[in-house]
Length: 250
Image (cartoon, rainbow, N blue to C red; front, side, top):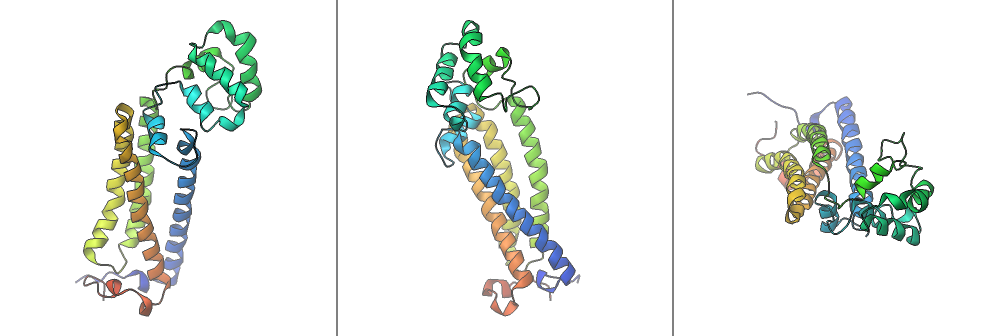
């Protein structure tokens, strides 16, 4: 019978290696959550992540333009209310070129071009065509952006879950729950990414995005904290469910 070591019996060098990885991943997950709150979490103009934020991000706020959504959301603090109102009204009027040079362009130059310029990689607001594009009805994320973000998430985050699950696989834990916890992040990652595409076409699927994120976050947190505890906390203080794992290595 092949004997596989457990986290508690690892050499100190491997414990330090795995601990460093898990701590960095844990902080990374917290930063990812903060980034979501600061981007998608402001899509409806209100702090905190809500179903409307998800709908506006992927399905769009089809009662207005992307420009309006941004000015009422995460860019709200970048310009005074009267300036934002003038920009929004221009977009609602169909973004006419006749008003661009005299009235609207100076506002964009003053409040937007520090970020939205030709060198930034963001939409270039020095050009009327670029501004008119985001002044169209907001239909949410484009197919191109969904494809790009989906493959980055699936490839990148899958590797994170692979290594977290690999380390957790050495834990002393009831086998059924161990298998469920290892599989859960991958399943919910697929649900999360799939929900973006479904929400693009119907807002009711926004709930799946919330479910997917919560699901893999909880499973990852349990695995990370369990692995850290089993590497550094004395076995005498472990919960009974860890001590009684019939498949734990001898």
